[in-house]
Length: 152
Image (tube, rainbow, N blue to C red; front, side, top):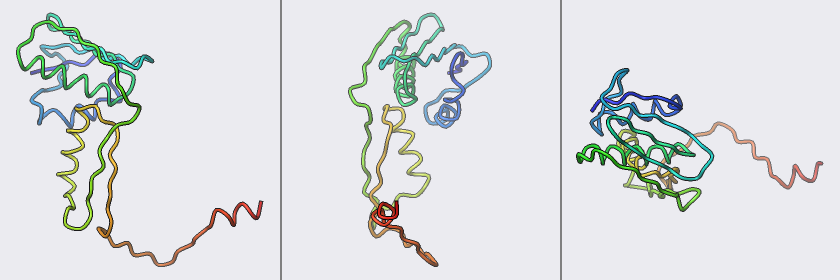
Protein backbone atom coordinates (compact mmCIF):
# COMPACT_ATOMS: atom_id res chain seq x y z
CA UNK A 1 0.00 0.00 0.00
CA UNK A 2 1.54 3.32 -1.10
CA UNK A 3 0.76 6.39 0.99
CA UNK A 4 1.46 10.00 0.06
CA UNK A 5 1.61 12.38 3.03
CA UNK A 6 0.16 15.90 3.05
CA UNK A 7 -0.25 18.55 5.76
CA UNK A 8 1.39 18.56 9.23
CA UNK A 9 3.56 15.46 9.00
CA UNK A 10 7.17 16.62 9.48
CA UNK A 11 7.31 15.63 13.16
CA UNK A 12 5.65 12.25 12.34
CA UNK A 13 7.88 11.17 9.48
CA UNK A 14 10.57 9.28 11.43
CA UNK A 15 7.91 7.34 13.35
CA UNK A 16 6.05 6.45 10.17
CA UNK A 17 9.27 5.32 8.50
CA UNK A 18 9.98 3.04 11.48
CA UNK A 19 6.58 1.38 10.98
CA UNK A 20 6.69 0.89 7.19
CA UNK A 21 8.15 -2.61 6.98
CA UNK A 22 6.27 -4.13 9.91
CA UNK A 23 2.86 -2.74 8.90
CA UNK A 24 3.19 -3.29 5.14
CA UNK A 25 2.93 0.22 3.69
CA UNK A 26 5.27 2.53 1.81
CA UNK A 27 5.55 6.31 2.00
CA UNK A 28 5.84 7.71 -1.51
CA UNK A 29 5.63 11.05 -3.32
CA UNK A 30 2.71 9.82 -5.44
CA UNK A 31 0.75 7.16 -3.60
CA UNK A 32 -2.52 5.39 -4.23
CA UNK A 33 -3.69 6.86 -0.92
CA UNK A 34 -3.28 10.54 -0.12
CA UNK A 35 -3.18 11.04 3.65
CA UNK A 36 -3.65 14.55 5.04
CA UNK A 37 -2.36 14.93 8.61
CA UNK A 38 -3.75 17.81 10.64
CA UNK A 39 -2.81 18.67 14.21
CA UNK A 40 -5.42 20.63 16.15
CA UNK A 41 -6.22 21.75 19.71
CA UNK A 42 -9.24 19.48 20.22
CA UNK A 43 -8.59 16.38 22.38
CA UNK A 44 -10.04 13.99 19.78
CA UNK A 45 -8.92 12.01 16.81
CA UNK A 46 -10.85 11.94 13.57
CA UNK A 47 -10.15 9.42 10.83
CA UNK A 48 -11.82 9.46 7.43
CA UNK A 49 -11.29 7.75 4.11
CA UNK A 50 -13.12 8.05 0.82
CA UNK A 51 -12.01 7.46 -2.77
CA UNK A 52 -8.25 7.36 -2.10
CA UNK A 53 -8.34 10.41 0.22
CA UNK A 54 -7.56 9.83 3.91
CA UNK A 55 -7.62 12.47 6.63
CA UNK A 56 -6.44 12.26 10.24
CA UNK A 57 -6.82 15.05 12.79
CA UNK A 58 -5.12 14.69 16.16
CA UNK A 59 -3.88 16.71 19.13
CA UNK A 60 -0.82 14.71 20.29
CA UNK A 61 1.58 12.48 18.35
CA UNK A 62 0.49 9.31 20.15
CA UNK A 63 -3.08 10.05 19.04
CA UNK A 64 -1.92 10.29 15.43
CA UNK A 65 -0.24 6.89 15.55
CA UNK A 66 -3.36 5.30 17.05
CA UNK A 67 -5.46 6.88 14.30
CA UNK A 68 -2.95 5.76 11.67
CA UNK A 69 -3.11 2.15 12.87
CA UNK A 70 -6.92 2.26 12.70
CA UNK A 71 -6.69 3.66 9.17
CA UNK A 72 -4.32 0.86 8.11
CA UNK A 73 -6.55 -1.79 9.68
CA UNK A 74 -9.63 -0.51 7.85
CA UNK A 75 -7.82 -0.20 4.51
CA UNK A 76 -6.21 -3.64 4.77
CA UNK A 77 -9.62 -5.19 5.53
CA UNK A 78 -10.99 -3.67 2.31
CA UNK A 79 -13.26 -0.92 3.65
CA UNK A 80 -13.81 1.70 0.96
CA UNK A 81 -15.38 4.55 2.95
CA UNK A 82 -15.38 5.29 6.68
CA UNK A 83 -15.45 8.12 9.22
CA UNK A 84 -14.44 7.55 12.85
CA UNK A 85 -13.92 9.74 15.91
CA UNK A 86 -12.42 8.87 19.25
CA UNK A 87 -11.90 10.82 22.47
CA UNK A 88 -8.89 9.77 24.58
CA UNK A 89 -9.86 8.97 28.16
CA UNK A 90 -6.44 9.57 29.78
CA UNK A 91 -3.82 12.33 29.62
CA UNK A 92 -0.97 9.81 29.91
CA UNK A 93 -1.20 6.06 29.46
CA UNK A 94 1.41 3.32 29.21
CA UNK A 95 2.75 0.16 30.82
CA UNK A 96 5.53 -0.47 33.31
CA UNK A 97 8.04 -3.13 32.29
CA UNK A 98 9.90 -5.21 34.86
CA UNK A 99 13.37 -5.52 33.33
CA UNK A 100 15.11 -6.66 36.49
CA UNK A 101 17.33 -9.69 36.81
CA UNK A 102 16.64 -12.29 34.10
CA UNK A 103 14.01 -10.25 32.26
CA UNK A 104 16.33 -7.86 30.42
CA UNK A 105 15.22 -7.13 26.84
CA UNK A 106 17.62 -6.61 23.98
CA UNK A 107 17.51 -3.13 22.44
CA UNK A 108 15.93 -4.39 19.20
CA UNK A 109 13.17 -6.22 21.11
CA UNK A 110 12.43 -3.15 23.20
CA UNK A 111 12.28 -0.94 20.08
CA UNK A 112 9.78 -3.36 18.51
CA UNK A 113 7.72 -3.24 21.69
CA UNK A 114 7.73 0.57 21.64
CA UNK A 115 6.50 0.57 18.03
CA UNK A 116 3.59 -1.66 19.07
CA UNK A 117 2.78 0.68 21.97
CA UNK A 118 2.83 3.64 19.57
CA UNK A 119 0.23 2.17 17.22
CA UNK A 120 -1.98 1.49 20.23
CA UNK A 121 -1.82 5.19 21.11
CA UNK A 122 0.18 4.82 24.32
CA UNK A 123 2.46 7.71 25.17
CA UNK A 124 4.71 6.48 27.96
CA UNK A 125 6.60 3.46 29.24
CA UNK A 126 8.17 3.02 32.65
CA UNK A 127 11.13 0.74 33.26
CA UNK A 128 11.79 -1.09 36.52
CA UNK A 129 15.44 -2.17 36.45
CA UNK A 130 16.48 -3.30 39.93
CA UNK A 131 19.82 -5.14 39.98
CA UNK A 132 20.04 -5.01 36.19
CA UNK A 133 22.94 -2.70 35.47
CA UNK A 134 26.14 -1.93 37.33
CA UNK A 135 27.12 1.71 37.14
CA UNK A 136 30.75 2.59 37.82
CA UNK A 137 31.36 6.15 38.95
CA UNK A 138 34.83 7.49 39.73
CA UNK A 139 33.57 10.10 42.18
CA UNK A 140 30.17 11.20 43.34
CA UNK A 141 29.07 14.68 44.27
CA UNK A 142 25.92 14.57 46.30
CA UNK A 143 24.03 17.78 46.85
CA UNK A 144 21.25 17.64 49.35
CA UNK A 145 18.18 19.77 48.63
CA UNK A 146 18.09 20.80 52.30
CA UNK A 147 21.67 22.11 52.06
CA UNK A 148 20.72 24.28 49.10
CA UNK A 149 17.68 25.67 50.90
CA UNK A 150 19.70 26.43 54.06
CA UNK A 151 22.25 28.48 52.07
CA UNK A 152 19.62 30.68 50.43
